[in-house]
Image: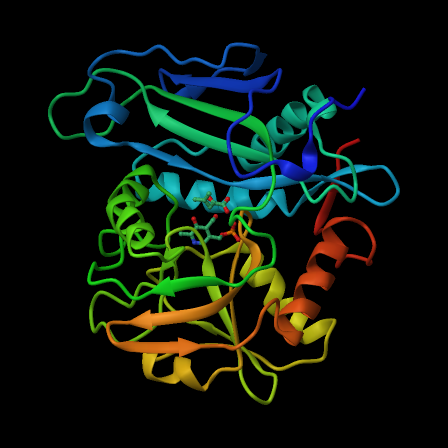
Length: 338
Ligand code: PLP
Ligand code: COI
């Protein structure tokens, strides 16, 4: 029985569900893993994650489709990106096949928490890993825990389709150089101050420029960015210091193959932003959130719309249509779980 939750009023927060997946790495191998009802973690006071932030995470969603199935969107890409992150952080890879199997187990064990079709909510999944044994010299841990919990969520930005505002901060891109393309705890800790500061100034998020030249658009604290030119080309910043968003890769494919639009991944100098017709943030949590305004010191760029721009709306409808089974998906994009 689907839980009695007011799905349409859910924001992006944590709500405890029944089961999470836990697997431990010790003596060079992963144990077989298990589902647990315990949402707490107890560990050593000098654990690698606590001392040197040796931790990483992923974000993905399960959806209920128009025909009553429960599906996941491209979980293999999350598994692969987490493997890439682990390699860069000297953490053991949780094998791709086991990652997908664990996702399936967690979703199946929490089926009652998968929001109903059409509610606007979905079940957010958070796979993550951290170093658990004591380290005090600066070196990688040797023991790790991999977990996946699930929590039903609504929109990342409050206010539905109301366009959000961004500002270009004085802060550099949050990620230490060379780690922008991984999804790791430390990157996000460094972005907390810029985000709090943006909120204080009345903005929803930061539009980071590249830290080397501070001329090209990168991404925001929790999402990539797409733009639409006046002649309807979809443009997204090319950079190897941003997180390679799975939503963005999917949108670029949708633009080209479903909507017949030109899609370009290329450097986007900030000076070009004023010439675009539409701008939106894209990500698992953000989905596709329209941007109404970008402020860089005393320059204010207004995209002049009250809701989603025309092309953004088409991209949104097609992507969410694929995710929720209304539109046929490209081969391999949808994993049916129940
Ligand atoms: N960029 C950052 C910094 C993020 O935290 C996220 C969220 O996962 C994204 C981009 C979007 O990535 P994806 O579409 O794979 O969720
Ligand atoms: C996601 O979209 O899954 C994210 O990780 C964004 C965020 C909540 C940091």
